[in-house]
Image 1 (tube, helix red, strand yellow):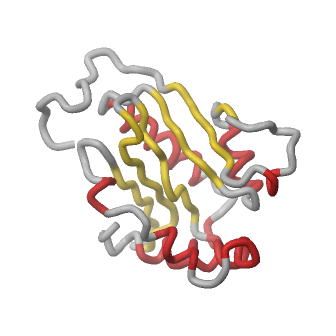
Image 2 (tube, rainbow, N blue to C red):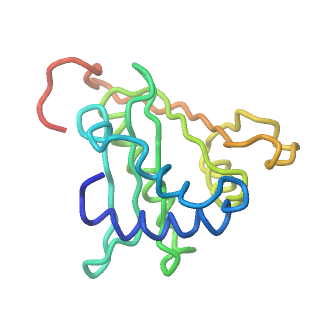
Length: 166
């Protein structure tokens, strides 16, 4: 993601990933993971990038890319540590869901790490369905996958059909 507004969020996310997962994945892996997908995968019409700013500072954001013909994959849902507990991640999720539905996606797929219980609870509390045993130790599962059906809006364009800029 080349947008300069994203850099502060990704930099902090890399530190948090290293702090939470350093003993699982080793050094440098967080930055590699954060740069794993080409920025083009998040561009319209198949993707989107959303950044919430406050006083010119990036405080929360997220993105999605095409997972399959009917599914958007949400990535990097993030709130800066100084701005948590204000409902910003919920706002990001709701807006990404709206954008994805407008662009013809019918469902969402996402994963979070086993050491991010607050993310797990956010997804469960916003209508996502766990694709893993909730009673199992998250450390034995690896990435925690979630799905959600989107409300399809009447008259939505079909992905891949000619349409204006998104």
